[in-house]
Image 1 (cartoon, rainbow, N blue to C red):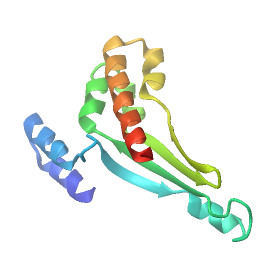
Image 2 (cartoon, rainbow, N blue to C red):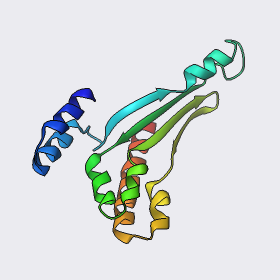
Image 3 (cartoon, rainbow, N blue to C red):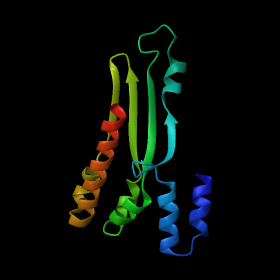
Length: 134
């Protein structure tokens, strides 16, 4: 990410910035900004033999700055919600994937153009989750 931000800072045009973003995107059309291993905290609080001691929780922050821009053009507050968070929660009963939809965040702004982009984003995130779930 450090290299990405340096490259973005070095661009002087929209075209240059867009090209830098596109190079950073993965096949899903997203880039991973960061991840948090929440499970490491639970492991320290539980004994190794306790039920759920194998529980893993990972929060991944991902997105596409070009999609964020398309929403923020209409609703600046979209920048508070993008990039988005996926939560991968592995426990004894299986793995759960969680995601709060962008459309739910932007619905209250009653801005149809931003909401349209948000729904497209949600569809892409949901497709990624389905693909990841195999």
